[in-house]
Length: 92
Image (cartoon, rainbow, N blue to C red; front, side, top):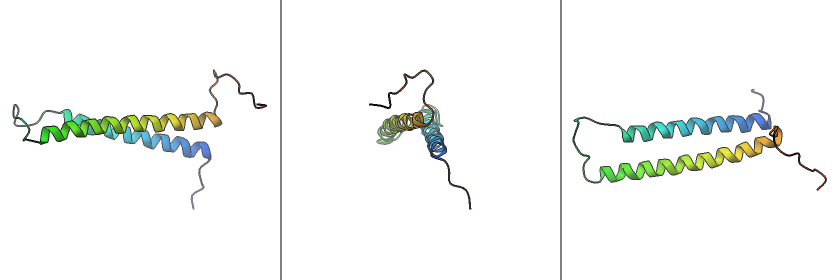
């Protein structure tokens, strides 16, 4: 049986998976922006609008992933405080 991760490891691994997800979204968006054959043809009625919607949703998903990563970074700061950060007064 595999050992359970430490709390910081759990957060780092979750963050890494979010990186993978964000990269996959970027790849999907790139495909939607690519050229196609036959060159010079237009997308069928409704398909272009669907692609625009998909790109908008991908952008929103990437923004949500960024917010999630920011939250994980803040959580990791508990375990690895930023060297430049002001010390926290634990007596308050």
